Amino acid sequence: MTHVLSIDTLLLRDAELDDGRRADVRIAAGRIAEIAPALPRRFGEETVDCGGGALLPGLADHHLHLHALAAQQHSVRCGPPAVRDRASLGAALAAATPDEHGWIRGTGYHETVAGDLDAAALDGIHTHHPVRIQHRSGALWMLNTTAATALALADGDHPGIERNADGTPTGRLWRADDWLRTRLPRTRPPGLADIGQELARLGITRVTDATPDLAPDALAAITADMESGALPQRVHLLGAALGTSLDGSSTRRPTVGPYKIVLADSGLPTLDDLVERIRAAHADGRGVAVHAVTREALVLLLVALREAGPRPGDRIEHAALVPGELIDDIAALGLRVVTQPGFLADRGDAYARDVPADDHADLYRCRSLTDAGIPLGLSSDAPYGPLDPWAVIAAAAQRTTPLGSVLTPDETLTPAAALDSYLSPLTDPGGPPRRVRSGEPADLVLLHTGRATALAGPTSALVRMTLVGA
View 1: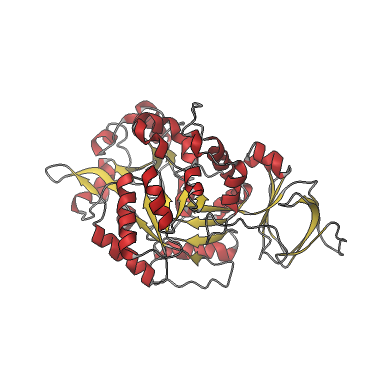
View 2: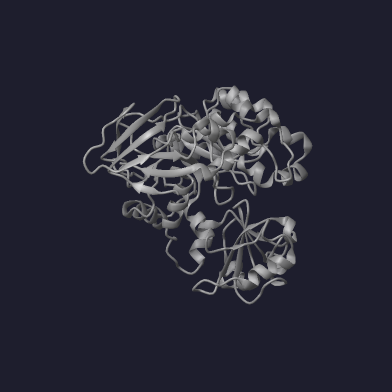
């Protein structure tokens, strides 16, 4: 049974440490106080018999989206495997319970279900309520006419509003989340208590929220959930606005990381604009974390960083396609990559079908990057990718698609290397893994088995207990 405990004092007996030794570990005041072959139990001290189970630092997911994860709990699944065609999409929307404002929110859509959805296509599926459906990439929202009318889409001035030749909106919005939030009925950001428990169930004690342009109310809501204990995990933010200063002295408040810049597939910025944004972030004392999923976006980023000058901490988010000839350029600029091989296990067959065969070797590279000395942080991109870190570790080691094909086996990591990536600090994804050491915060995950057995078949079922310290 998995627990998440905000701990003060605890004695863990017979735990397997990272070097293979079995020892007792005492936790006091939320930190690892002692490690020894045998420790005497103190009066009133709770004990746990680990039975030789591996005791690891809590896992760190280096790229996810907290409020999108929470919102998905109240959304209709609109893509595979639950929904596979137009009829099942219609049935899912018809069965949905609208929110308090009468809206239906869908997620996870892919074109294999019912083609390219626009307002006209959605009107043929559901017209009774305003409907907005998010593409599984997270980059696109699709609205029916009822929703478009409610948002006064025709009067909108966001560049992501797709329009027909006559200027009328199609009902498709690209990278327009901020604008959409200003037009939707006012709601509070969703609570994160359930997400905190789910992360703990998986052994995750630290996360980097990669939501770009984080709104002030979203930042306040994350902070409030951390302070109350509803979200026990430590949180590192990429989307905090430039100039944001957070008190990092408390573990119950988020910290600020590199500045998130999105190079949207639907419209790349000019080189000058990108260079200016990078320089502004660097001048604010922050690196940049740049979303780049296409070859064109990656080339633009590398040219811009050469002109602006790199800064320690600069990182590439996703790096979904990395041509081999660019690997040395990434290394020369001192960049790190935060990527998601879990997408291969989740939708690798679609990649094999839709991505040109010549590009298959460039998909979600792992080993070739680490071989070049590029720090590699693994992550989920949840809710757009699978959250389970053990599934991502398995995907990095196997690169197997849902139908059993193996995509670019030369890019596999060892399970141990993949786990180490999840053990690297939030401030240093892909850096040296954290270890169970005296004096460290007691952010720990206890497994049912030893490390070797766990790595032979990574699964979240192996997580026995998750602890969150001071």
